[in-house]
Amino acid sequence: MLIDTLYSAVELHREEKIIYARFLKPHAVLSTCRVAGGLRTDLSAMYNHQSCEPAGHCHNLPKSTYRNPEQYRKALCDRHNLDAEHCATLGTAANMHNASIARESFRDLEVIAVCTGGVEGNAGRAGDPASVVETEQGFERLPPAEEIPGPGTINTMLFINTPLIPGALTRCVMTATEAKTALLQELAVNSRYSDKLATGTGTDQIAVAALESDVTPLTSAGKHSKLGELIGRTVYSAIKGTLSRQNSMHPAGQCSIKIHLERFGLKRTALIDTICSFLDQEEAELLRVNFKAFEHDPLTVAAVAALVHLRDKITWGVLPESCWGEIMAGYCAQVASAVSGDYSRLAHYRLLLVPMVCATDNRAFCRLVCRALALGFSEKWHHMEMLVDEDARVTSDAEEQGEG
Image (spheres, rainbow, N blue to C red):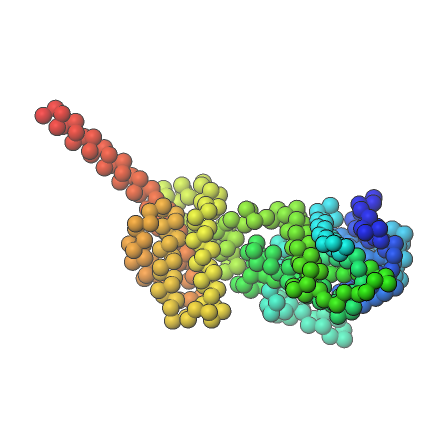
């Protein structure tokens, strides 16, 4: 099915599990593809293909197909009437129906990004511990990463309607990558391989195609140039759209204390259990049945997010580690106040939490935050009971005076 025709030079099609771009006019293509990758000026098409479901799926195709990317490409291209020898391949587990297309223009300049993405299982940060090392015999798995990474790949196909010099074409990849990372930071996407925020996934791919013509080629695709701005905006928008569709990941959905804490090893069940361990039985049961509303309360999320960010600032060396105690005690008190709604008790909460501010490891940090959350939840209803008791006492006193 023809989805769109881009600047009268590219036909964008979607069929079965593939989105392919057929070039009607020559393009220079720079890509990360294993075959036909690098800088090419002889390609007739490039495509993004869903090779499997995101989890628990194994094809009946011969294993040699996956070890031999040329064979894999030929099988796909034959099926879709594409010239395999002149085709660049991007592969993913993301559904092509969840692809997002973004378009931006300025005067005669036009940029289109076509992205698919998933980050639930494979998001990582540049510099995270590697899981494999490549040798002459292939990829060797490294300890302790014995498990296969979860699903997750962000693929970007970028189309530009004007020629670029090779250096500018390369710069497009940098600008697009920065746009992707900016979005992941805003969505607070956690690395699955460390306790840091993700900058991408371990299998991201990109292909940039620039129309070839007799027009003077552009020389810059950085952030100061209009081309760079359009690349940043289209890639940001397209990846934002596809993550919303594929992973139901959108800004409002990221308003969650669990999302901000899970990169420190605190999954949902452990989060609930740890908070409840600081509550009496009745309070714990009340929190469990109301946890969804509790988890997404905006002021509570704001306080937890601020606390987590301050922890990052200490880890990065922006704030001195010697201030750990004062910072954690003060801002955990803010967390408790956000939950209880009583900011007049801020100093009191701080005094109660100070004894727990000791170790700086992830486990101790998580227990401290859970203690603050539990303290606020307990006090929220404790003070309501005190108000009810006070109201009843005043009413009783008034009735006794009336009788007198």
